[in-house]
Image (cartoon, rainbow, N blue to C red; front, side):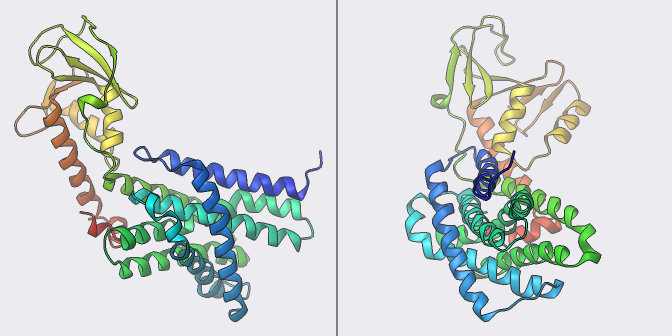
Length: 356
């Protein structure tokens, strides 16, 4: 069946938007409305394309490795960053979460890529084939190039002036974009293209996890946020008071039993893992649970020994306040440890240092 150029353009947008939705799905705390992301992708893409078209009147890149970085990457990533500043007044009220920086610049990048794909298709001998390749790589690539600028922009607008972070984010985006195009332009380097493409996507999601770890939208685990599933399970013993009077509740995807006698939480290993994923995004949970198995049957997670993990029963017993304090301070330690790595230091200077 023959596919028209229009159909491929629609598919191109849908694939890019699907990737944007994947990014959005990681936003567990305060998801952005779909309609806003769609509008921003259209308007943002138009503004970014107009800006880059004007700049290309002054800059005439050749298809070589040097121009890919110094001209193509510079012009197009500057245009995306400029678009965020131009359209900021439109979305500033909803721009209330650090993860929004990544999601909004991703929406602009999606719109930019789709319009760029259309321009390329108009001058191609085989437009359908070209568009298929571009939506497979370029659309996702454009989103991955620019995520660094989203973090720096959020800090600049919502926390404090962050010119150094903006410059660093622009350099990272330009370098990622330039290397991507440079490897495509140079046949001797084409073998590095796929590894680079995969690496850029990996870095994007690693940055997302850092942003989630800094998010203030997580809040605390509160009784009022729990949905009661069963008021009296009757078959679960509380490790604190030894009573069998518990009720089953749910927070997000984690099921939590609460002792009706002493109000302590009884959380299975599986559901504790889900809480850690939500509250400590940078934690290596596999290593964490291996460490608990090594230490013995009963492990105190805090100095006061009020948070106890029973490895034999594979469950956690604690109170609300103790668990919230532990999650908060351990999340900070996760970030401090991460920022001692080379990657962490670079990301730290995007603007995360102002969020500590």
